[in-house]
Figure 1 (spheres, rainbow, N blue to C red):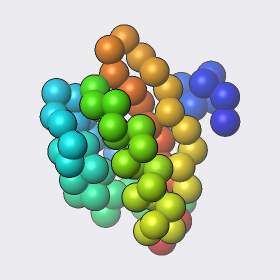
Figure 2: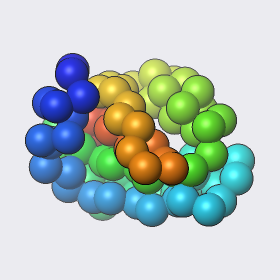
Figure 3: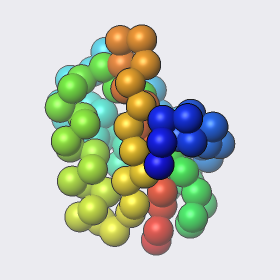
Figure 4: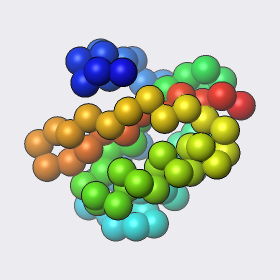
Length: 84
């Protein structure tokens, strides 16, 4: 997806993990995913650059779709689609 498409997504749950370091953003994503309906979107906000590798690996491992990452002012927005 393009940055503009990602920015236009309506997230079903947003977890704000800005200001936390690994493994904080990943743990926040794991806690936030059960609140997302199957087929819904989880958005993770993170200021830790390691999250940009951790979240896609986690999503693939557990069977979700990593839709993309958008860089914002001093942090990243990561979008994951729940598949199960």
